[in-house]
Image (cartoon, rainbow, N blue to C red; front, side, top):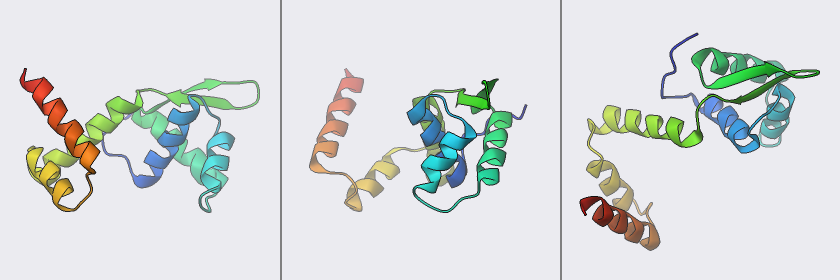
Length: 125
């Protein structure tokens, strides 16, 4: 088995989002969910799900007719690792420049800024 790397490709992340939402899914389930948004081949989804299993993101078990896949790690854990990897690579490990960038770009609503202040104060206590 390959060691899981925190950064998933955009297509891998799209598959993981479907599996997290469904909690357990076949290749067909994921294919149908993705196909509703864009063109994709069934065999591509199947190959990518096998790769995600090899990387340690999915676990497979044999169902009656098809393999059933479920997440090997909870969503918050994977997303946290992706965010940490991004902050490390782009901002040399410092979170403040990311928050400043989001605030300056208008990506944070007034309520989100309030929430960040509240969380920061809770952490300081």
